[in-house]
Length: 276
Image 1 (cartoon, rainbow, N blue to C red):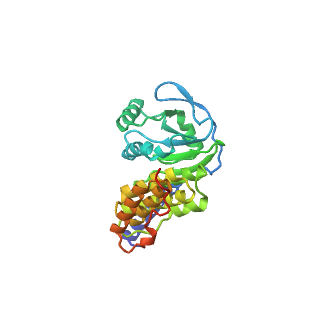
Image 2 (cartoon, rainbow, N blue to C red):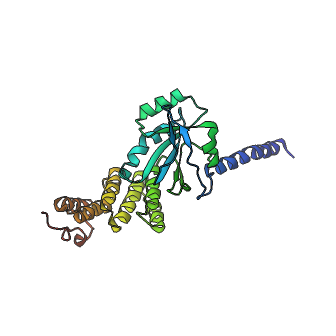
Image 3 (cartoon, rainbow, N blue to C red):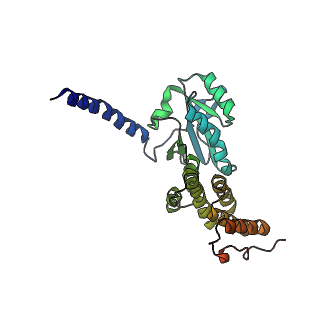
């Protein structure tokens, strides 16, 4: 066998198993429904707290110091979950007991992360959930079982996580969540795709008459793509349902300015209750 062929075979034997291992690690986690013990764990501040919420769900965010993805996720996570304030939902950061705690403290301070951070001694919690990456979110339901798992991604992490939490809280159905996770394909780029995802979530919440949450989602959509006419239309419909007639009419007019082909009949605040 020629030497170059032998070298290629060696390369395949070395690289392919490594890539396969990376793929397995990227998708690894315990089965949904795995019980999670509500242990008392040491916090970054030196106290001890129960890991899980007494009632409701817990969002466990596993991160590392000196990792750029963890830094970005820490900055994004609390604003992402802002609309769930007042709900039965608790956010907890988790770091390995093997990392330098001063580095963790510095990262938490720099990013403004205010949720409690717990120390996972011996990576026991991380191992019990069979996780294999950082950063990653594990959502534990009110029954103290693994309900969802979401690795961090740079484009649509917040939108996907919010969808999963809305499902867990009963705001949307499984089929509705799947539709928000697979919105209409956009050709304009990542920001428009993300805007369509938020718009899809807002539509589901609007149809369920969760107007405040729908409004928050549609505003997120327009923040990513202010020129998405369908999101402007939905904004008008939500505002009309809330009785904000003047704001609804302004949103409808903006939608028509963005897309003159929209049906004028759909751009109306006629169903808006009269302002008191």
